[in-house]
Length: 337
Image 1 (cartoon, rainbow, N blue to C red):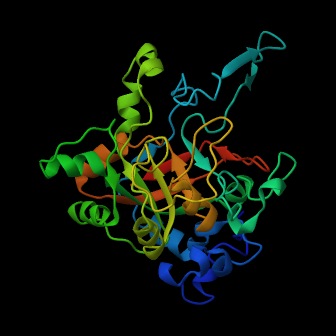
Image 2: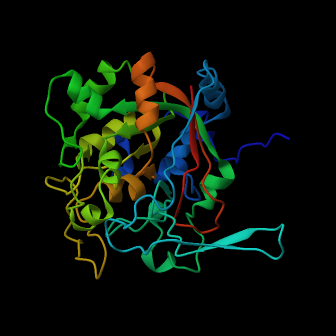
Image 3: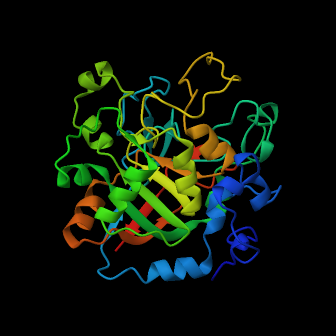
């Protein structure tokens, strides 16, 4: 039985032109998508765009884009305990199971809009930090799960671009990808943007990390990664290209650590614990634009296939767990070519 998309899905496509980034009030998409919106840039998706993306399926090859949920143990930040998987049986011919210490953002993940806020502005739509509590469900991952995310996926393969250009590259070093460089990579790989695209960015970071032994992982510096530059021009590039989702195979999508940033704020305060997000692209990208964002996606096999046939576009489906109020989830993502 078919399901009618929620009213918010794609409604802006027929409700007036999308403003340019420079015309957004206070750099936010809040007014454009409406005061009750909880879907952010996935509003750029529509049934017509999903139908067009389905036409990209030619060979029927598909690629699962999730790593195992325990793939990144020990977790680089040290803030998440290893998962514990328990199997039990009630009789000889029955098996059931449960998990403890299942951190929903400990491996391949999709962030909910309640994940990160902006100092002085709050969370997406202006949700105040004191209202974004464990008892709240606002901006939870269930909004993506209920609506589903289906559209045209496009891949930018950063290591292959650098290799083709004869430029040095290391997937465990800080390389900030600015807007002109993103355009160069797209042109070199024949990628154009059609509006409502689901952008995948391969940096090679996950492959490098997973090739290390547990002992090496425990001692290696983890805040070293290529990724999007912390520049306002990158926000402009993503918004004006009407990107509905951006995901990468690294820890943060953006370059790590933050070296130069347009997003330092007088409201920044060192956190009591955990990662310091000061200056990070996460804050304006999620809280101000409402961008759907994914991390630690498995992109190596898909990238190899794209390089082999020269087609860097595909049908992409993303179906996170329907956990009401969840802050994140495995993406359960599949690319189909």
